[in-house]
Amino acid sequence: MSDSIALRDERRFFLGVERSISERAWRPRLAPAEEGRALAISQIHGHGDLLARVLAGRGVTPESAPAFLEPTLRSLMPDPFVLQDMEAAVDRLARAAETGEQVAVFGDYDVDGAASSALVVEFLAAAGCPPPFLHIPDRILEGYGPNAEAISELRARGASLLVTLDCGTTSHEALAHARAIGLDAIVIDHHQAPERLPEAIVVNPNRADDLSGLGHLCAAGVAFMTLVALARALRERGLWTSARPQPDLLAGLDLVALATVADVAALRGLNRAFVTKGLAVMRGRRRVGVAALLDAARVDGPPRPYHLGFALGPRINAGGRIGDAALGARLLTLTDPIEAARIAAELDRLNGERQVLEKATLAEAEAEADRQLMRSNRLSCLVVAGEGWHPGIVGIVASRLKDKFKIPSFVIGHKGEICSGSGRASTGVDLGRAVRRAVEDGLIEKGGGHRLAAGVTLVPQRIDAFRAFMNDALEEEVERARAGDALLVDGALTARGADVDLARSLERAGPFGSGNPEPLFVFPDHRVVDAGVIGSDHVRVRLQSGDGARLEAVAFRAAGTEIGDALTRGRGEVLHVAARVGTRVFRGLERAETRIVDLARPDRRSS
Image 1: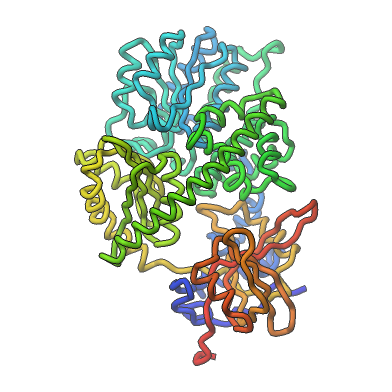
Image 2: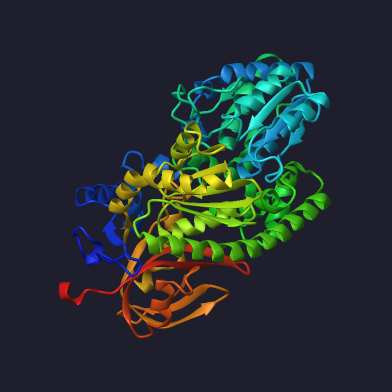
């Protein structure tokens, strides 16, 4: 079977599409000069034409193709001690293990914080420490990061070493307080760091003086590397014995994979190996809490990156958003299947409540965004605020606004004299840097994050000033991003070629996500046979190619959008259809799934 048809347009725009129905240009991912690289990969390694194009489009060469398709920790993981301050952190943790010291673990309330906290808690307990105290802050009552009140309570309970995970890099006051009351502190984090670090041992690949090149890791990835280094140090000190064997570090890769995908870390280099190997561990269902969550999320078939980001991740986050923030981290450390099933069911219920809250808040936020855009259609950043908006869902709503309006977006909820909000941005914009400037200028009370996501705390009277600041701060970056915004197409397909065999072949180039985009193909000149809304807001369509072959496809969350309307009103119309091809398991059977991303009407003048 031939899985592709020849590319029909070698020009600057794929199939001549300068503006699609969603107002985006379509461009070939491969430049003409790079076509030879795809051909060489295909001929040397015997891969199909489309897989070879996908690999070449992601910078893979004929020489690097085998290693890319089979990422291994052995080849991709550097010595953990390349991270700044790793030696000091490992020495302090080793002393705690040797003396049976009481450690307190303070994690963030998201998936990355829960996963990295679970990793460290499990390892330290296996290394001889008393069961570490685990504290996940309440999003509303405590806010992000360590705080003096919680630290004092942990000290009063007997902790002498504090380990913060996925937080702490900017917590100068809280960690100074920890030192003042006799608590040593180790920060294991990945967020962008200020020039002046807090009074603690800080292991963070994004601190200014770290030259490891590992800034794309999430906190769980940094924690895993820390535990690898710690295991080595404890082996050298003779701690591991037949009575106390070294824990299986590879068994923790399921948590690293979960955090990496849920935190939208770039899937390149070491992260690809983490996710590939972590998914293999997760399929064994050895971790009781993850197995319970897979069941609660009704995951059919082996877990895939999609399930980590859209089934497991949201449920763990639901505890931190609108329930008990510690539920997710506790679930990931459980060994009792009955208790795990109970907590997983509770997280599933909370996730349902979160979805209801999100829908109502999104409607209000979109209305406010529309009003702002009516006053100025060249905004560089949306900043919308509402009375009583739940702080646990503002990040999700910000992401929805960013996707719909195609500009960075902040959603702020305020209640009384303080407001808290979250922002989201797309590639090409550094949100974290702009927020740090707002903090340094005294415009907001607290703020931090990374390039694509950030959080802020401010008083209501400063919302307008913050909006103006962000529009000025992001203007140049957003303009550059707009100029380069295009849908990058990996190749062309027909309805007959989009089958399970092709999807399985393409999955070899995964895992896909941030930094390793899922392949995108165009189905040229396909007729819309039928289309209709399914579920609450999805559109299912049947397409037919010129040779009569038919294909079912889905446009998710498309009802009421330009794409959804074009499909449901376009029965009989011939369209170019941009879509991704994958697989899904339904009732135990693996099937091909085609997901529509964009549409364009053929320009018959160029035919």
